[in-house]
Amino acid sequence: MHPADQNGNLADPGFESGGFTYWSQCGTVNAKITTTRPHTGRYSEYSGTSRAPELNGDSGVCQLVTIPTSGVLSFWVYQGTSETNTTYAWQEADFLDASGSVVANFYTTANNTRAWVQQTFDVSAYAGQSLYLYFGVHGNGYSRTYIFQYVDDVSLVGGGPTPTPTATPTVTPVPTPTPTGSSKPTPSPVPTRTPTPGPTPTPTKVPTPTPAPTATPSGGPTPIQTPQGQGNQNCGTSCGVERWHIKTLDDAFVKTINWTPTLTTVNFMIAQPVPQNFSSGNDTTRYAPVEITSYRIRATIVGWKTESDHDFHLVIADLNNPSNTMIVEPPDATCSDACASNFGNYYTSVRAKMTNCFGPAPSSFTNLPAGVVADLTGVGFFDALHGQTGVAPNGIELHPLLSISFVSGAPGC
Amino acid sequence: MRGTGAALVFGAALVAIGACARPYVDNETVGQDLERVARDVRGSDLSAGDKDAFAAAAALRPATLAGKTIRQIINEQKTYELGLRLAAQAHAADAKHRLQIARIMDVGITSYRDRERALELTLRVRNKTPKTIRRFDTGIIVSDAAHTRIGLAEFAIDRTIPPHAMVEIVAPVAYVRFGEDAGRVVLAAGKPKTIELDVKEIKFTDGTDAGYDD
Image 1: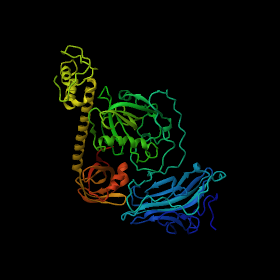
Image 2: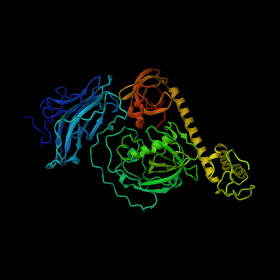
Image 3: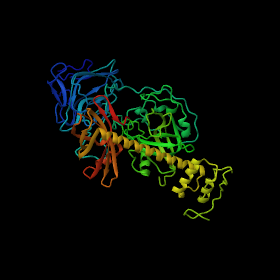
């Protein structure tokens, strides 16, 4: 009999059973309980390979746990890899549901620390739930790289009585994390988990946003239909960085936005003052009132291009003052955060309209034919000035652009 | 009645423009008597820039002007010319950028392979400087045999390239890097394609860099 964690929430926390009595194989490639490199005691868990070739698939272990009230998860990891990023391979720790889907991702890394490092997470948000705690690595079998992870001394402690589990998942068969690869290319993009740069984030609740003042209904434009809830938080590929959550409507304050568009002009937008405390590094809060307001602008589309973060960059000009321009941008719905925001359909629709009418977005700024006038709807946004083509003097944009409706100059569109 | 090609019907609204001293009313519609209107604009007290814009629009796309006010036509042309200027500036900047990069490195794709989850490129790179390169960011445009663009992606290559050295680099570009175009790139696996490569930024081990900075 091997002792469980001190609160009885997790069995064989140090893998000292030497085998898979309490932990289960949960990957497509077997993990090991090994004496090679323990943190304490004799054993630790090991996934992956310490030299090329890289494993091909997922290798990891899991155990069904019930998260206690005020739960804190803590464990030690020793990680190594020759990968430079998490595009093809990664180390990870998650809560999984019975089907192997990720409920919470603690980290996705390509770390080569080669030292025991303790990780601690507040898991109180999952109190009462029975989930599978998973540690593992993923690789794609590349002949020239490797990735591995040792895990030891896992602890799941709580501050009070554990609530009665709300659901008991099926215990058999043992869940296997959904493989992200297959033997043949699939027509749709292979999903990748959002990489976690640097320090490991703690899964915490989204902060309650400050309610915005109720805008006077304009009685005109139809409010934008907002999606319910959020999309898969572990979707998409990393595209942008600067104020990326705000740009993709994946921030905590998206619910403060007034979705009844304010009818306005480019002239009005470019005259708005830049917020006094504006910082291009602010990716958590919105600068009211502009960034909690949706706008509809009728303007001429001057030209466009695609950007390195996959945004379409459109320059629009005021109908009456052509020298006054600003930028509007729809993100790529396959990018991380854009896909998690659940507004992806809007982005895809806008982009499809542009490409259907004018072909693939050019990689270098290209003008449109004369007279392409459209009604453009999006959320106000301040960007830093860094020489963008067509940028407004105050850096104001519609970002994201949520809809486009051609008025003239685009026959058939 | 003279016209520009299409059958002409005299518009109901008259453009109240005559000799240069007369007040100009520019909210009248052009109708289809374009040549007469253009003559009147030339004789009006509109600015030289406005007159040039109207004349250019009338010359470039006469068939699209009917039903628009003179002011609309002028603003539309000015916006179009702005677009041309911005595009020209962008292309000039691109050309200057490519020249800068070419002074620093030669890079070309010697071969590629369609792998399970990535388009794997083999690059030959020559560092033409006395500094050590530690990383470069690059973009690729993939087109099919008909030169129709399939997708584009950007990625970084972290590789130390000593001064004046030539290296061969195998760079897998995951299909997901192509974003919403990933599916098209995957479907093009095994089919003839062309791949253009454009180095965006180069970083040296001495902390300096060259190229775009965004």
